[in-house]
Image 1 (cartoon, rainbow, N blue to C red):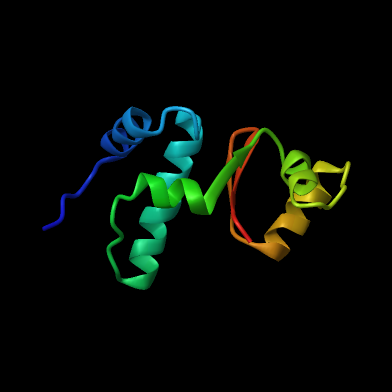
Image 2 (image 1 turned 60 degrees about the vertical axis):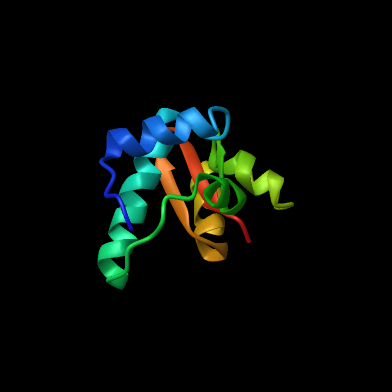
Length: 101
């Protein structure tokens, strides 16, 4: 049994369960990324907020994300490029969501 969620339902349900993990903007961007992945793979994914929190992290900037992964990079564009070489990255305004690697 599966339920299809709209973007608003995804964001609201996620924030009800895990309110401190992602911003609203980050969740919207992640929803779009996950929907695109479903279309590309031809597979539905389950709504698993805990799993998503274990796999993804949101950072205020690409440079902050790089630092968290032990790579010092002051230039935001180079930091984003480095992250993309390592893993999946979703941009959400000024912040970035990074798939753990």
